[in-house]
Length: 116
Picture (tube, helix red, strand yellow):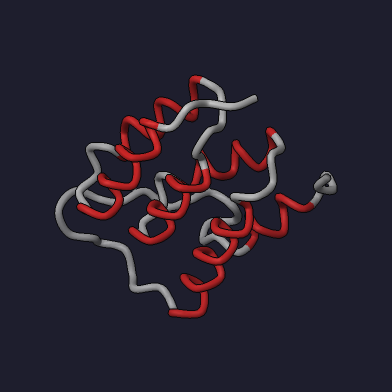
């Protein structure tokens, strides 16, 4: 089971003190992030996929709006078989993502049965 502060450690690795940055329209007006920050965020989303805790699910749903396509991709897979309307809404949004890999992952995950 996760400790109450475990999500905070992951959130601190995200720019903006834990809030994922939204993508802007076609091009990004955001500065390029250092590669190590992206690597940490990607790894965190992958690792959280095996923890079935509501706090983790909330972090994964928030990660579906990350600026990095691979964070969104792994967030989609990590949300597989998790119940809840917020999960479904996030996956449906990702099914229309600008990135093909993210779209395909979300569409595949939406076909999985939900377990509780």
